[in-house]
Image 1 (cartoon, rainbow, N blue to C red):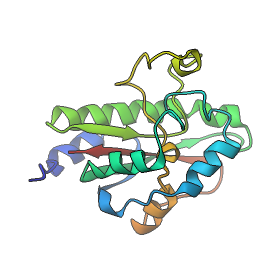
Image 2: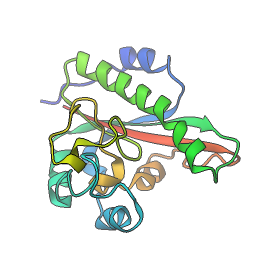
Image 3: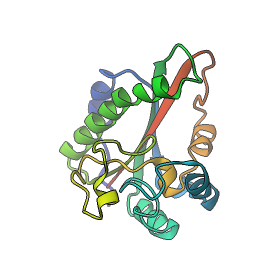
Image 4: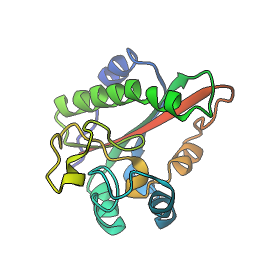
Length: 182
């Protein structure tokens, strides 16, 4: 039997954060695609250097299986504003606030009696260098959030299916997280 999230308590809790939109999902509808991981391997400098990215997160099939073990998820976005969208350093500096929200929401769901697994933005940057690069275990496995893309999750497919915003225009950024729970 699936333990339901107390939506009244959840909505009261999440309303204290600058969450732009959120949806409770059935994870059966989450698309996992190899093409997303191909982008990781071909375009991301973090590929193969961190526990939050491929190949450290496992094969695509292992990631798909991991997601399927959680029947529900909270998918949400937060908004950040920057002076120039082309300034990658400025853009990435806004990610920390989203990650703090993600951790807090995950902690709330966990405290409500659910087991959680969090997928979030970009790649974990808790440690520099990552212990993966040193051939050692992750130093903070309960704080590290693999990125959505590392698991092949097609975030824009979720956004479209759930009638959410993906681009607000101007100099705004939408960060997305997926908190799987059971």
